[in-house]
Image 1 (cartoon, rainbow, N blue to C red):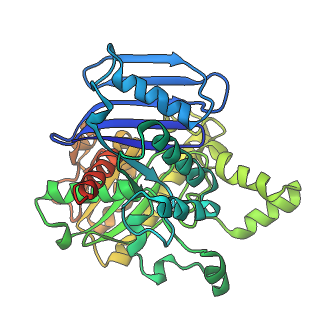
Image 2 (image 1 turned 30 degrees about the horizontal axis):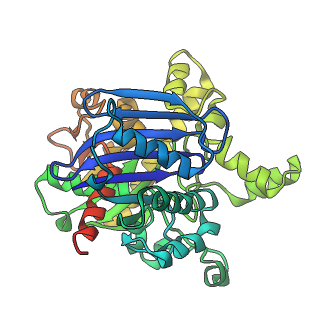
Length: 402
């Protein structure tokens, strides 16, 4: 069974075709600048063939046509007929309280995703466009499944997901913590249990998805009990361009002083803050690291803040879990920045956490494994995330029930 995994954004469409017999990726690609001039289509196969074209894509339907043509292309394709695509799995950012698990797509499900657009205006609108465009190009007879970023976090108790505002806002507008990156946290927590040779139902762990967008999740016996992101992905700790948690009065104070509209303030919080705002260099941790190493004090401050805040959240989740068997690092920074992992380990050393310097330095560029010392009280792992595989697995499981 071959499954096409789709991640549709407002102006992009990423895809992977996965052969579920061996769970291997056959090809992947990206449609960039959909609906804008200067569109770019990139397609790469597992055996090293690659093509990149400049092509204007008016909408998501045009983008799916590019994907379809690439899959079937005589030179760069990986299938002989669209009949080989057994199903399509879509990543959906916001499932709200409506969706606590992956489901097969029908019109009612699409309407449900549309109803949640106010909670994720850019993401969910784009996801719906992607689903409808996929149906138009691949046909309605191909089963489609939606997998929600928020679903893994649906097991949080009210004490973890409620905000301290009047309860009526929860009742009227569903204002609460939803959490994101759930598919990633789900994958790495399950994979960590495998590496430990234990059943996940017997483990407590803290998973750290550290990238340009970042979140940390407390996983108790395979279930999420708390996470750092909230109503939106802005909550939590410092990210590439996002503030993370801050005193709400900072928002109103700056708005008043700078005469900003809500939309302008939203732009500051989401796109001009975080690593970029503190360092003044870049939102990319690699650039900030290089600047810090060359003596830039603001760049070093940005890294200090990031490492400190990550460590604080892990410490808090240790309390929430009542102990912990493993800490997992994943995503761009988590997988490839040994210095950050070492710093966090140092902050947690009084709890008995010991990161092995040699193992830590070696565990980069897609490698997975333990980086904690033999006498560490909590095991520490680096595990490359694979959200696409989780989506493909869920899709396969649901389609096989048809």
